[in-house]
Length: 130
Image (cartoon, rainbow, N blue to C red; front, side, top):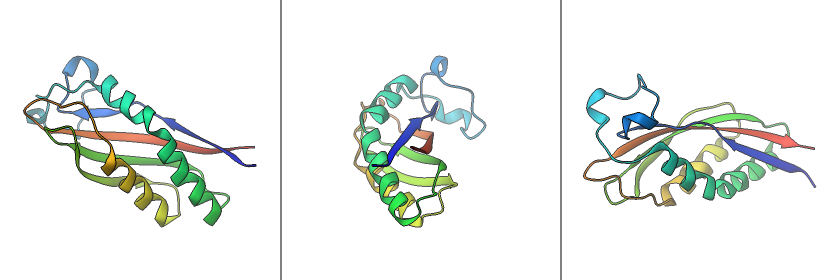
């Protein structure tokens, strides 16, 4: 059976503790006020990577050569739920893949980021393993 690998890269979290976040031109300075640590975001993402892998395996059924990267952006509300999610860019040519990942991310729950929202920019790398 074909095995697939999904690697989560380093996230950029706007509205996070500055010590743990790469200063990001995509983040307005005003956004960097929250209490959500990038490591915390990464832990939640890693716990849910199987959902991204499932989306990728469905994409491979459509196009067995599909591999590359997808960059997601999502907003974590002050209750810890995902208010909005979108594909920022993707080199996976299967349209349903981005929709599948977006739907998955919208279901994730994060620790409460305090009295603010946090915007996350998160890249994933997808590859087939023979």
